Amino acid sequence: MPPINDENAATVTAETDKKSQEDKKKKKKAVGGDGKDEGPEATMSEEDLELKERLETCVSTVSNDSNEEAVTAPIRLKALDVIVTELRGATSSMTSVPKPLKFLRPHYDKLKNLHSSIDSDAVKDNDMLVLRARLADVLAVLAMTMGKHEDRESLKFKLSGKKDYDTLKERGETSRIDEDNLASWGHEFARSLAGEIGQEYNARVLDGADPDDDTPFADLLDMVDVIVPFHVTHNAEAEAVDLLIEVQRLKKLLDQDAIDENNYARICLYLVKTADFMSDPDDLSEMLETAYELFRKQKQYYDALRVALRVGNEEAISGLFSDCADDMIMKKQMCLLLARHRVNYEVEDDDDEELNELIGNAHLSEQFLKVAQDLDVMDAKTPEDIYKSHLAETGGFSRRRDTGGPQVDSARANLASTFVNAFVNTGFGQDKVSSGYRCIFAI
Image (cartoon, rainbow, N blue to C red):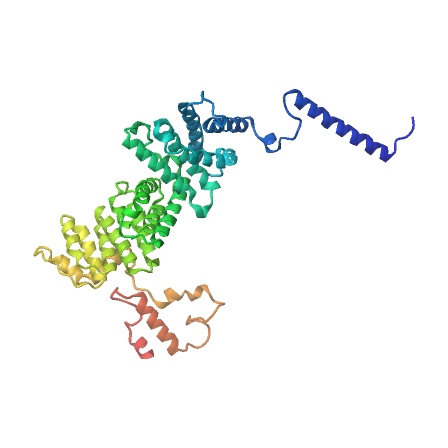
């Protein structure tokens, strides 16, 4: 047998690989394939392939390209409901791009053309009107990732669907309208839609619409009234406030039943902190007044007084005191706050002389000593207790007297010790430095 060189071995290997690939293609043809590489579908799991085929079948049924008479509007609605169910289940908690959105991406333009082809004559039938309304909902969700950001397609489709739903209400078909039509699509969709609402609002204002009039923005404000409670109830209070600020309707926050004792603190804190970044004085005043009303609504009179003093609304003091007439502890806290702000206010009740004394800081020293006694810090401290120079012998200037050399009094060191002693023991009424003649002589 003749020896096989390297060139012959390489030729034999290439022919073997080519033959094996041809055998694989023949096997694929035998089972109904075309023998070509299927690309991404080859890496899909059986569940993904099944989902993709189901969605494509539903899209084909909804579009009804062949205009089959057997494919009636109710059948198309059922196919569309399958798509709606898959999208809602995938977008309720979105951590990545859902698979239904990926599989429906190639059909986005086809569904858009279908929506535009359903004219006013076709929607005289209620089934076709429901079909166009639900198709607009689906396109609004798809436009969240497939539409152009500057075109605001998601909002346009949502507004179109809302008009169709309003028409259904006029026709008495309320049973065919989803009550939670917006929130059921998930938080990401609601947040994306809120951003487009803000852009559309600003665009209409630039076109000449009056911001103080609700009529030019009625369709947008109707959606705001749905998105804001959804954000508040899903721990996204900051996004709800941002949306109301964007559409200049912050007072709507006071009408929200979703604000309770569990979330009012986060909302008010966000309002107070965000107010620092408002360049317009009117916006600043509106944010603080909204926080004041929310605090007062939740019976947090101390916090309401704090915000009122920041705004400079001293007229609200009397109202807050009357609201908490039965809560003496709350009154005392408010009096201490007024004393801290040096507000000249007098409680008119004859039985509340103690409150007036608190406002005048008559018991400030007594209260300070009481707190110090409770904290067990009444013992006077020496400057050495603050310096702790025995812990740092090798670093810096040593203030200890027993350094081994002659004891030399430094005027600067004595002056520093005097200041330290004054600040540390301020308010306690006693200290250990200024009680002797030597310290005074040294200074």
